[in-house]
Image (tube, rainbow, N blue to C red; front, side):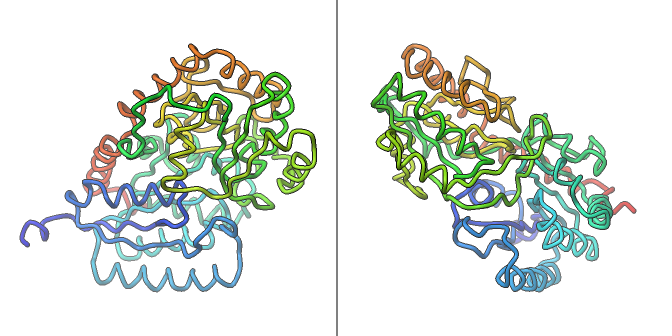
Length: 395
């Protein structure tokens, strides 16, 4: 009991599964890691939706969730008196106005230091479109932040003009690698390529569907498996991260309708949302993993594919440009370049030795760099540093 009382009180604020996407699973990993032995952790769950279909949509449910969040945050701070709060922030204006600003200002009101975690890679571009008044509020809120975490060295600039560089730390995506054990990297279906993520233009879904005829012309039996939620509209990604240009929106439902009505319908397989053993089954079975997205922080889906020993084909967005070496553990393609994407898929399907080298490299790389035990140790150091810092409430 005495030992428990000597632990520093830390309030974790954020989403928790379901749904089973990156931010929710990331929070779950931290809460179940050895961090609970190092700190006296209390948790405030912020998400109220069970799926990602209406995520970030402003409606009555979101308004009610806002008032509940503010009330519970006040209650937990007053009851538990945490020294520090850990909070994943959003990259959108709706997210900042709807919760982030309030969280940071309430923590400041009670003298609670804050560590914020940006899991996306599009705050910098989105911030330019914020209303000037909101921009001012965000700048002021960021002055109360003790430390900010980003998911790659190349993402430090997401806080440009908001925080000094010495208050920005890098914390890569984490994964429980033991759950993705693959004892036989040569046990896979050479016809199966796998995409997992939101079925939206921002994730590169529409571009990938357009590669099907190009790849099937050489490999008629190829099967493109798509796992994830399809939805209209974009609710966070509005720009191509590689060049800053506005994203050209396409309706994924129309793209799906076209491929299903055409001669390559047998090459397209829509799975819907997959999780648990079914997800692991598809990850184990596929020959390669694809995510040709326009903007990312560090995709958990990519890390899951790497964990199962799969070559990765992705775009140079977010952490992916740091962890995927072109031709070594995968291929990097330009966002929107359908022909290049198809060519790289064909290359891996055609070259078994290349595919095997990439598979082995990724399987080892994840266990050496991204296992939750490694990332949680880094997280512990950052939290301890934030607790010891004295600049969290700078005017």
